[in-house]
Image 1 (cartoon, one colour):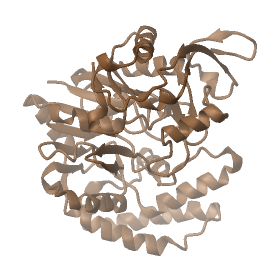
Image 2: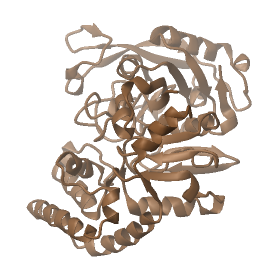
Image 3: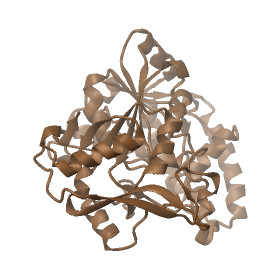
Amino acid sequence: MKMDVLLGLQWGDEGKGKIVDVLAPQYEVVARFQGGPNAGHTLEFDGIKHVLHQIPSGIFRPQILNIIGNGVVLDPIILKKEIEGLGKFSIDYQKNLVVSKKATIIIPTHKLLDAAYEQSKGDKKIGSTLKGIGPTYQDKIGRSALRVGDILSPDFKEKYQLLVEKHKTTLSFYNFSVDKLEEMEGQFFEAVEFVKSLNLIDSEYVVNEALAADKKILAEGAQGSLLDVDFGSYPFVTSSTTMTAGACTGLGVAPSKIGEVFGIFKAYCTRVGSGPFPTELFDEIGEAMRKEGNEFGSTTGRPRRCGWLDLPALKYSIMINGVTQLFMMKADVLNIFKEIKVCTQYELPDGEKIDRLSFEITDTEVKPVYKTMKGWNCSLADVRSYEEFPVELKDYVAFLESALNVPIKLVSVGPDRVQTIMR
């Protein structure tokens, strides 16, 4: 058995949570492999909306084991709140949620550092969610971070204090106040005691033993490929490896054990925070897209930047991830448009046209070259099969499949589970 991987191909917010929930019955294990509580995976069923930040999106299926892998940076306070929020759904998290002892912990001063770093950048801010994720990954790479397994150690408080003192030195350099630290620490240590009661494991053994036992595993990514720390629009990126390779390092699975790679993309594009966005719309069309798609961050509430679909960027993500199947989300958001545009190339300042993401794309102003298509301009709310799609939507899907050279196996036409059309 091989592990399938599901990840976003744009700048995040593609709808991964919904698709994990839809696919989950086919799997026995769902494992989150990177990122932190900056993720907001939204699931909607039975008329109720659920937003998960750190817990894998298979948690609502009692037969599925959900693993928070070693590649995740974990905020104990947010995890405690998330689990408490699941209480009303009678979810036995002691049975179907486990946490890697090698996952890195976000401590209160990581959040203060995040705010200090962002403040110091002035108008060059990257748009951090201020959840402490970047500074935590910095400490992980700098070999000074604390991990989940450390909370079981009798000298955890000493290890914690050592790291805090190091952070305070940096914060004093930025002249950043630590007045809130005591209050934050009260919540933190209370949450740490709660996390001790969870099933803390060496998850790499559990994952590989499950594969050896022919169990089906789905690896769930956070953010999107264009936010990858190596291949995204650096420095306007997240701090982790958001692509297929991250599933290997974030769960301890060999590359040869990767099976299907499900790439999720919106029928248009959105982005939160700063950074290049060639197809961004600053007019009434972009505003209509934002309103129709309810494009506000599920973690931060920030309005998302909106624009037409970007094929050069999408092709790039497909290439670096080895995508085998495509899932197109939020097709219904385009219901309101009589015409739909798709970016097929970029025009450089000197007039040259290119169809790839180059290193210079972050610093070069490019103009999108569009293909215009006829919109379907009707509701998809009651559509339950591909055969019921309006011809214009079928044409849109066919054009994208031809351009991307990967089959689009699923089209989402609404937020509910039942509004998910398999092809």
